[in-house]
Image (cartoon, protein in one colour):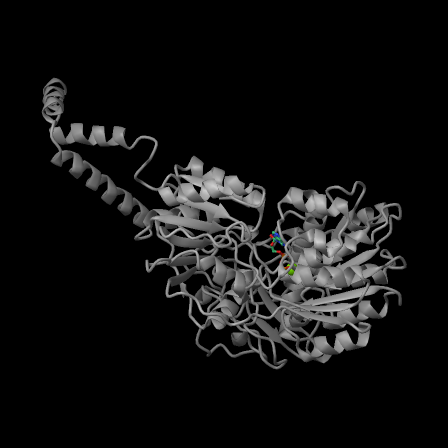
Length: 605
Ligand code: ADP
Ligand code: MG
């Protein structure tokens, strides 16, 4: 890793936070954490540039928590995030870091959640607010949120907020925060407008950029699986079962806790697996590595630090179960396979929001990483059947079957069945507890939003450019932004990929003359109604109003939220548009509209 810092203790954090970090299993700071934490503890403004998955939340959350005065039940920190999923995630992260800080209260506020609940929670007093810009702005306007005690302001994923059309809201909020506070801005890229906001509102900010050095990697097979539709654990076991030339594996995860959990789960599924982490003393570590060498263990689940320098030639596979923080860590990890002239395989699990890191790794290593098609249930079943047949054949070749053949004959006679039937019964008995047929489903594309980066653009240098999906695997079934009409479109265009299922067309009272762009509409609706942006259909932008197609069966809760939504300050007054939508996407697939909307607000969980 680029980080030369090996422990959180070196960064100046308090004992109580260090204890918490150790309890939740963080072993070493990620590079962005190592660099940001001391700067923020110093009270300076800063700009952090790093991709998704590099550990930015803890980078700003830990120093921020050091400044919180628990006795003052007023918002002392405000974190702005582009989406409600992120707001919830960040709030949950803060809550976990506050494990040893009794009385600490963090409150996520976001569109789509009832004001009544939020007002009640706000009035109870929260130390930290994590919110989407639109909703925070609303509360500031209504004076239900007061920032007089603000010490820290964080803009998380600033470029994403810009892309979703929230930048004016963000500035509006920045204008209304008290003079004296620390500001931290995080962004994966630094488009001109973000740079401008930083110049205007940050005071002598320290710039921290995690760069990725180029590196050469051994000639090993590198593939990735984009996490979707199946749990990582299920995907992992499928891969372990069907991978050719599998001998032994090192699986990398981020936390100590995860090493133990995954080792337990793999053991329960019949693998000889063990955890390797910084909690083990030198002797125990050496024992694990010895066992991997000798074949007593086939799988070791490790954190980056614990696996440093492992040299076990029989390691045929390195599996990046959690994506590494940077390219150097990736290179170190995969260097654990393909040793002593043997073949090596590196498999990387990539969540949709981590696609950028995948591309960075490819650039830095100057090698493409190919997508891996996950073995289907049939593939796994076939492999198991093939293995089973091999085993039976081996027994057939061996001596000493006469005694058993005799029993089979007796059975055939007594039960009046064929030898084939008896064999089938015996096969069934033999596979008890380790079924040959794989249960469960093959991954299907899901209508739910699990990750936030539904239409993350590949790069964001150019304001005029429309966000594109080029980074995404399953392009075909998603509506693509560049296909959305800038002007109301005639029906004679070839069909574009569209959400399946019935769509209803709505009209909203904002249009070009309000300075509204398509992305503003997508951003607002996605956030307020909790609908995945890929299920938002065509958008027609007119002068004074616009139309938008949404899946049929919108729950009342979402409809109500949308009625009150504002875009660029204008109430949109969403209502069903007369006439039929420009195309209804009936088809064979019948969708349950309800399922496309999130139902559980955070407060109810
Ligand atoms: P980002 O905001 O850069 O996308 P996150 O802050 O969401 O990244 O962190 C990604 C994941 O890494 C989270 O699951 C988080 O718990 C984990 N993580 C962050 N820092 C550490 C660390 N020092 N050690 C282990 N895991 C970490
Ligand atoms: Mg983040």
